Amino acid sequence: MYIGIDDTDSKNGMCTTYLATVLVERLQDYGQLIGCPRLVRLNPNIRYKTRGNGAVAIQFEEKGGCALRIEDTVVRTVEEMAEFNVPNTNPGIVILDEIPEEVKEFSKRAVQDIISIKEAIDLAGRYGKVHAFKNGRGVIGALAAVGATLEEDHTHELIAYRQRERCGTPRHIDEESVFNANRATYPLTWGTVDLANNTIVFSPSSPCPVLFGIRGDDVDAIQKAFEVIKSEPVGRHILFKTNQGTDAHLVEGEMASVKDERSYILGGVVSAPPRTIEGGHVIFSIAENGHKIDCAAYEPTKNFRDVVRKLRVGDKVTVYGAAKNHTINLEKIEITSLVGRFIRQNPVCDCGKRMKSAGHNQGYRCKRCGTHADTPEYVPIDGQLDLGLYEVPPSARRHISKPLIRMSGNVHPSI
Image 1 (tube, rainbow, N blue to C red):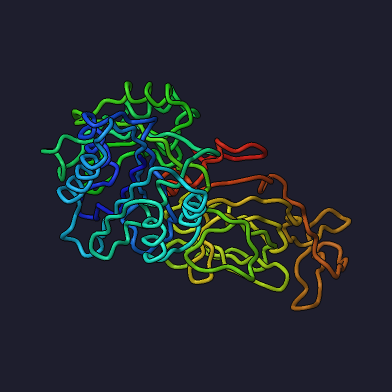
Image 2 (image 1 turned 30 degrees about the vertical axis):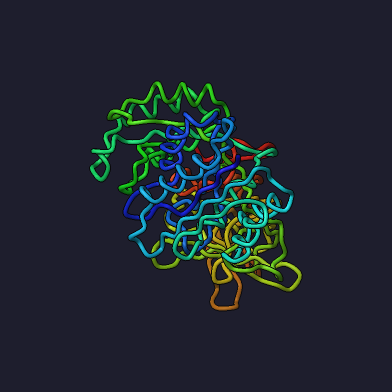
């Protein structure tokens, strides 16, 4: 059995991963969990998302004759724990006996595109059982989680949850131990701290049950980090297999076909230089085949903006990020070629003294010997910007974005 669940949480509390963790415990008498539960991040641009737009799926081998008990337990657990009193919480449950190719394709589209509730309910009903609560939007994520087999790229996350009575109170985590855990396990774990901004980033600030989450490529390293970290008592914890850190949301595209609420990889030439606007956001434009689009490094991307500010008209780049209002909200940028960088200076006279301006459009003149020159000097600047891939810092990184430490080539990881 494949059990998918989504949209049970709200900004006021709950977490679908926590519900899944409780559900795994409740199903123990009815069969055997196969592998790790799956945490699937869907299109991160969906306006209805709570935080990271994550859905969960469980692969379960039932004991003979327990199918109805399992289904009943899943439904009762969602009815008990989901945030039904919140208007934007619309839970969905999908139960399938197999994963058809059509469902796998649906899952991929749910990560990259926008899908209607009707399509999800119709497709899920064709192959299995569906429980749609309220408007049923959660069926989209539930079916997508079931269809995400994660056979290609995947990572893991160990999520630790708070004791129930502590939920809604300030979290107590020893920050020094988190930095120690990062030093001991990076780059096999990542996204735990933001060294450049000297902060931990693996713990939410919302009133949800999550205490923290440790992400990485190596399960042993994740477990080691978990053992090093000191915190308030952990109520329960579980390891998820996930598409986090994979860039599964990105589609290689062309500017002419960009749609809002999707994420793209676009190549182009800088056509308008970076400018800093109110709020500290940095905006520039790129062009390709007669089309132009703005790109934005927003204030929360912190030191990433310093890279963007060094771009010049004529530089060739590839940008990675989400489209909104015909602007790409940058997650990464690859600088593939640079135009020359020069400082304009008054020319130096043959006598060794630097000339002064002779007046508007009148060139330059040496005050010592009277020598005249028509044009300024352009002195090249070295070391301003290196080619390669740059990324936003961990504190501004989306769950699904692939950290550069997982990528090969000329990369400049932000750790």
